[in-house]
Image 1 (tube, rainbow, N blue to C red):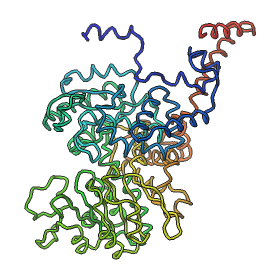
Image 2: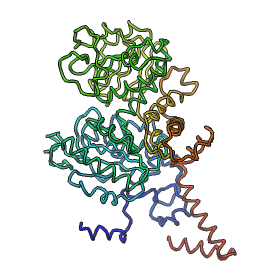
Image 3: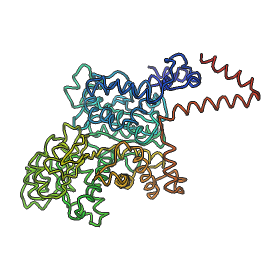
Image 4: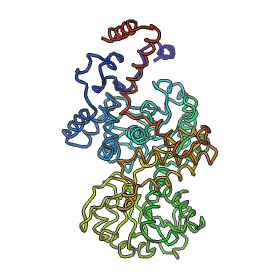
Length: 588
């Protein structure tokens, strides 16, 4: 399109990415349908939300595979956004695995095969120099974006622009869990090439057919992008996701923009939230814990860095806290004398007390360290086998077992394996969902260290406080807030995380903690919130949250207000009826 034609777009019909914004909702009463101009375009019966949900769930049940269920939900979101979020909010536990992990992993692998319609924005390396102009094509105001370059999608590797499923799914959870309006979200995928040769050569692949750009080229591109985003939408919250090396961008931008990286900071926060409760339940003082991490990537060290903060708050020095960790990567125990060049993020946790011995075997390392905690961020499915779990149970009355890798096929062990091989004593949390099970006459429910417990509240807290940056203290506050959000029954049942079905309640608690910490750090611009009590702040947060169950009433209020205005202008009942009939006629 030429520059002149691009500039003429304002004269064209407004662009919408979804087929409708809920205008064709079968729950809309007749007066709303007339007001929206949709009267006669939907079946005449006015349906209850319950009937709509029943139909959607029946349609889902007819789909034989998770990926087909995923595709149906994509279609539903595109055609009736408020119904989609009513369905998701009311069935968050059951549907989250279908719109995010683990199903989103398969969706990303097959994105080039199953693509049917745009759901976000793609910015290519070839667009550099024009990013700000291209952002003008987005049809609505944006409060938050999730962006990825697709270079490390879950545990599935480099998927290029196929990674769009991650920003789309993540932002759906921002809306469902924290009530950020769906039209204020921007899924954003950066087409910076891919080193996945098979994908790049696939005739259906929809990204640029070139190798991944260099780190320097990516940095220059991101510099332009960050400037463009904040110029177009001042105050926008920018969440990075699934970059192969997340640290350069985090270090470069975290003090300049309102941004965070969920892989590093969100993962760390949600694990710390469950970890705090696991430490309490273990009966072992914080100072006596020792943790082995299988997997020394950015996510693993990001988790450890935040647990270090917890240990410091429990009275340890920073050095003592760092000495609580033993990291294992593909070459064995991470040590200073191993002979290889360590990545920068591994150096701070590298051991120097191994007496010249190198440990390649996890089992031998457990014998050496005698850990109380076993964390898995390795994406090696089944790495915590029967022998490993039995060793942990022999060493500890309540071993802390956190297999955190996604998707479930990459999890280091299942909940069932952890329960049976520790005689039901494991304090367990995983990255992917596992079902509850009965053991020794008791129903045991696994904890899931799902980032959705914290990232929605981090995002909403940053939006409402108008934070100029997202500080590490704000991230840690999300973890502490999460650990306090369990109700009495959940604590009594030994849960490490609250019931996911209470996620909107939990998000209010997390959001409040993030806002209060932004205030303490002096990075908030909504200074009027400082004078609110906690109860008043909670009420304010709830008031600002999008609620798909209230959208019908909101449109109804618009209609009522329009009629009331018309009534005031005409001054008598006949005038009101005339205008009312005029509205009806116009929409019929």
